[in-house]
Length: 325
Image (tube, rainbow, N blue to C red; front, side, top):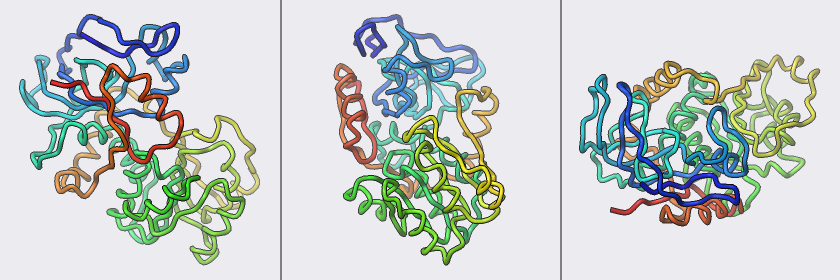
């Protein structure tokens, strides 16, 4: 089969052996795969948890048709249309854990649309609802809201009854579009005054929850913009892996600072995250109330170009690879 792998000189399309499913896995004939920032990290030569390195197949989410199921898999069968979070998704075939495999809603959702959702749904339901403990009537800020997972977070926060949903983006045009996905207000995380704008919008209190995909340069402003007894969930580090941190302000505001990642979670933990997400959000997914725009599609053979488009940070929503017939 064809796959996009990490080569010595960058991302290459190679012929490799198709994977085989284990007893609790599903083999999928891939029709589309969504791009994520972690793919850029791996393409640059860095490991993403246990995944990455020379010869590794890129990709973290996909959609397609079930080609084969393991002996312990009962909820999907051969021929079913599915969406999954799974490693090695930039390929004509991939295997996914049964707990990460979901039937595509029977509402005319395309494979391309389905491939945009698995990572965003599991990541942001966990960050906003489980780790972030968002309650109806609270105020929330999503840092890096114009990314695919950020747009999912906005929609989840709005549907869970947040009183005020704020999104950040460094691009004026993208900030304007955040309201289409549930944002009541948008701020520029590069503007030194953004935390003051959040405080003004919350009557001086600050937001109850920040879901932070930036970290780095916004760390202290996040503390300033968070209410006493508020929560900050550290999901991503688009603004840097290191930064200044005001420990006194953190203590004074008694903020819960929570780190989350899938890299150190067990199979059982990820299955539970997906179970909770499905239980809570699947009716909204089926009704089209949680959906993402597709910025651009590329054929698998142009995976390197798709990653360069993501690296340029000029997209809004998701970039998708297609595998054809």
